[in-house]
Image 1: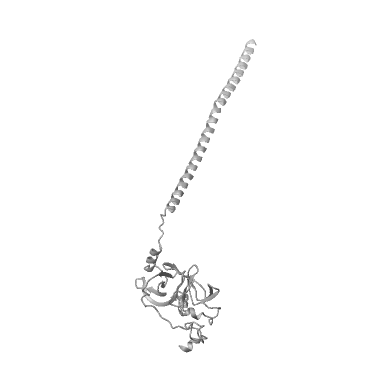
Image 2: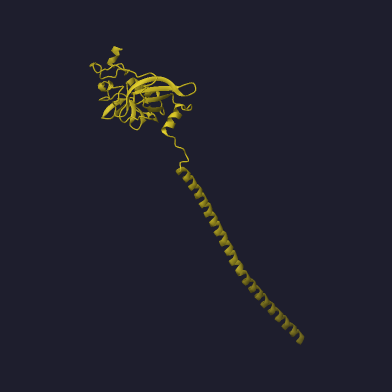
Length: 265
């Protein structure tokens, strides 16, 4: 009986010893795992930091590329062509779709219309027009037309027919009228055609400004120059009309049935 009791005591001691040893091992293992958790946090922090730095570097790289592009633009890497180069280019440009090319000789107050040759160059004279330029008319340069109006106002509260815009307030148009009526033309200004007489627009007979209005599409090239040579046709002439009291308030070339000049044709 005594031995049985001793065996039971031994087993109880062994159980208690095993319990405490297991607890000590578990605690030790837990304590050893704590630094590992801190290391993982450090690793994650480093990875996030590196990712942020990479993104910032990529952004800086893109910004640097954009700055290089801006610098190239500021340094005029894109060539700007001057007016004389534009004139030369457009005169011989076979890809230009406009049918006609208009040259205004400021020195002689003559407009010459050119069309293309077989190779597409605007060197074939088509028709001449007598005009009146003015102090604000360009003396050189190349421009493109845009559509104007059949009737419109001009300097001085006057009216004009068949305007075609050249640039800004510079137009091709008829002799001025006092009203929006074909029988109110300032006949004395008609007699000045062929001389410098306008404020800046290019004045023409109705026949001529209507021809430009009807036949020269938007984007038609207009070149201004100054020369003592009026052009391939010479300088056109007109008959003065101021002495014809019955008809002088009408443009002789205005092709409408009620024009009194028709009975003289």
